[in-house]
Image (cartoon, rainbow, N blue to C red):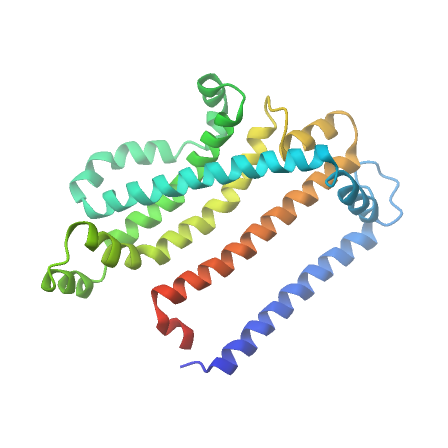
Length: 262
């Protein structure tokens, strides 16, 4: 069993290694780009200056807010749908057999390939972007949830039957805590997929958002602004991943207090 002191020391060690790796990468980028006269590879200092200036303006804030709204809505719909359908499929073998071929067919189609279909169905507004983000983030959550519901510990099932825990109570107090770790893994995979689809959908026919800024800056040869959009996208992905890691750790500790001493 790992002691709390050893666990804390290991955590600090990993954090230091991660910080050292990030600083090394930034230093290498700064040195390689410093004094660059290549318009396609501007100096990092110029990119950071443009990032601070542009993304604090009203236009920059408006574009970033638009991206965050569509990303949040798409992820929320995708995660909620994935958990709901995954629980049904994982607990009803006959339903799994019936829908498995259709699900495998739909899962094999990249969400980006459905952009023309989504544009015809929803137009070029936010609904199109939300649909694509939700569709892309649905699959990892659905598949992980279904697998978790399919592999619930038989001891839990026996205990539920012994105490006559059925129906809604069984789903809330037995099934959901048991599948929570798999659901969280699915969400972890869905977040970067949602970011990719958010940017991709904003590059086609959109009038606002991170992807729109990057595309427009590239088309008008404002390459420093284009790079600043890429930097903001990377920072957004890093922030979301870090925040989710903290949330995931708290939820897993709540679902199994023994993990505090693991």
